Image (tube, rainbow over all chains, first blue to last red; front, top):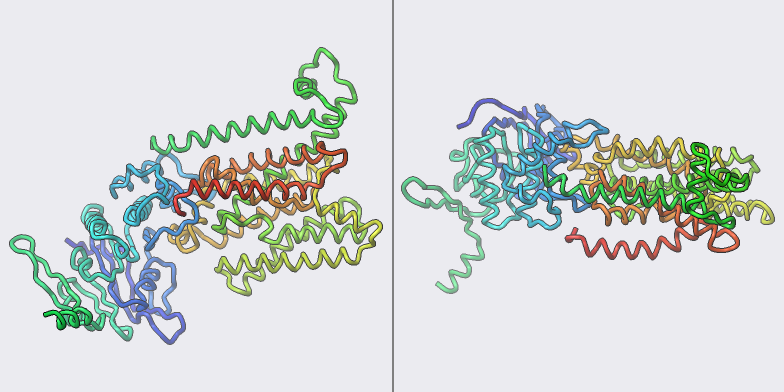
Length: 263
Length: 344
């Protein structure tokens, strides 16, 4: 499934805002075409910082980032100040291809519509972004990144604020984009099951600047997730026949207390 | 593609209607005043150089239309267009619909330059040059201050504008305090209140160059302003060089505003109110909203100036009228926008 065409690479890279506390250090990471990488870590550990270093928004404090100019970044949520139409938003993804004093032409509109088509949002083109649900906005932001004809797609918690159905829509879209358009994709998430669902590789941002990076089935274990979050995690085998998968279930203390009272 | 065309067609039709309304209003305004000329007669006078009318144009008519009213009307049109376009660009760049051309400190810098020139008794062109120079120096100060505080921080930029505005505001008060109350203080007060009463061909040319040039460049950047309005980080991920582009917009706005204040004093509220009207008419996309602002601004200030010179036997200072009319209009427009807005 994975080709070896590396589209974006971190070489012994590290980042620290104050020179004392490091978000990551001496990290080697490669994003390959057609491959999905999930980045997991506790709150405030530096997942978003890593994503911004990958995107070239932040310079690494040490080491080298081999940035790719054809990188699309999908923010966690829409941050615009004005209720532009969906098509206007997606057209913004064409910015790198349009001259300083230029405006998008028919060819750009065509590419934007194709991107909206790929995310299943073509019917929404004329709607105002303000009238869309959170899940729909996320799909529009992904379409915007696609309209830029990028090789790499970086997504900051793309499914964190979505309900189960929209999580399913976004995750399967990312899977299709990796398989069909051979994009190199990396996303941050708090849901281990999102990683097992679509990721080929997983990066765990463990305590004390340690990281663990490797194929999903190798990295995602009960013990590694427990040391990642500090909460006991149980791997449950589900399904049968051709669809068998592992789900990770956290064993919250609260549930133990209640079952002790009633059971 | 068809949906893009369909979405933008009404906006284009609205802009065409605005242009027609502006042309009709301008011709009507040429006839309105103490010496009234009927609308069709104004058209005949305007066309006289190409096709002489049946009743020959009297020297009085030619004088009123071409020498007295035309420069004033063109200046009002240019100033209104420039202020509204500046406001539209700034609201996009600062991602804040409550921002106007005053926010970058240029108006108050130019106001200080003008009052200082009156205090020093500089001749007319000295006043224009001084107002323009201090207006531009305000933006240089804002840039320097922003650099000292935090180069990439947009809030620091707004605060730098507030500081520079306050500084020049204090200097204007100081100059007024020093001025002699018989002669120079009234001149300063009237100049600061804004007026096109002293419009002539030279002043028109002086304001035309920066406004037309800066306006054309701003219009050229109208789609980039969509990108800037998404926020700094988002714009950067889209490949936009945020800081240089923002400063380019600010410098263009400064040239327009400094030129306008130099020839006609401080005219508030136009740059704040008109972009909201334009957004109501054609939507938030700066590609159509900025041209719509430009024409609406021209129309708006032309109407207000015509009222200012004809409503009473003496002229009403423009700054008073734009504020008196602008504030309730702003409240109404805001109410409309809040209704049509989907929670953003």
